[in-house]
Length: 174
Image (cartoon, rainbow, N blue to C red):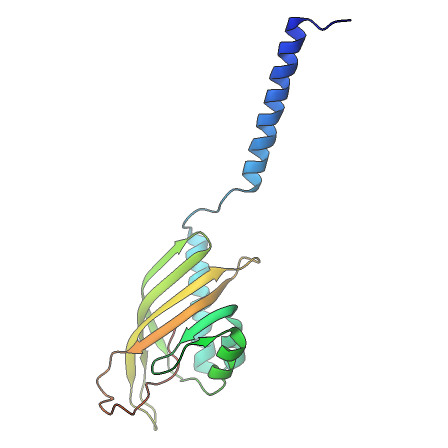
């Protein structure tokens, strides 16, 4: 028995409708996250808060866990430090207590975000106060958390007139 023209048209339309439905479903599954979202900004700010808290506690291990495996740390007057393990070794040399930050800008675009801000460290018995600027770049991980991928800061204070003085170690994000 030969199908009629109407049956053939219905079969084609049905096939087309199924194909569109399948493609729509696949597109929904692969949908890109919004470029910016309140949750993204909050996630980045929470990571920075953990950073400041870990630094102020002197907890180098907690600080190190905030970095991605392939992160780079760019401390002042120091060669770049690449990789979480090497960054951990840097932070195990010491952190400064009393770190305060002021975030001036947070931007998120998909899986990447960054912060720009200012930091302040109070004076200690060994070192004068230090203030400056920072930039931190973060990347969303598979589990949805945010990890540091690049961390740089530089001092703005004029308190170190001696060129041999190294800037204080740890300001970064918060």
